[in-house]
Length: 152
Image 1: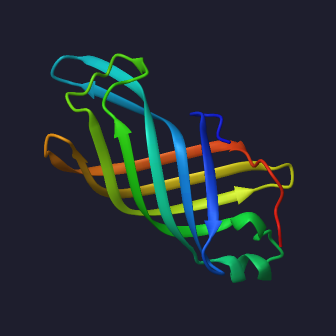
Image 2 (image 1 turned 45 degrees about the vertical axis):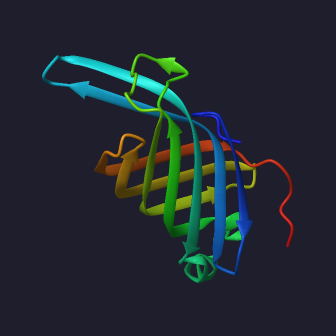
């Protein structure tokens, strides 16, 4: 459960170092225009899926650090779909659906208190339902709490 932008997330282990992470929630967008000297923002519903490969579990274990609950660094393939109408804000997009597909680097930490930190950084292909395509950055910071119990 993420608290910065409310969302629910589920991560399914696919192998020893791989997982499928899915989330349904809200995303934030901001835009500033030098031309009109105006800024606008929006909070949009979105659906995201990531195929993650965690690459530093052995190194973390050697240092005595936690790796359970996928506390580690990863590279991922990301797919994100978002609505064009904001739930809040004044950033009205001219499309009904937008998306992102691309690679990302990330780190995830789940602490003993069940506090969770997740950071995604990437660049990929953005698109919308009008057929527009563009290079798009990905910056995703999640702070929240893990619900449920970890099963070995």
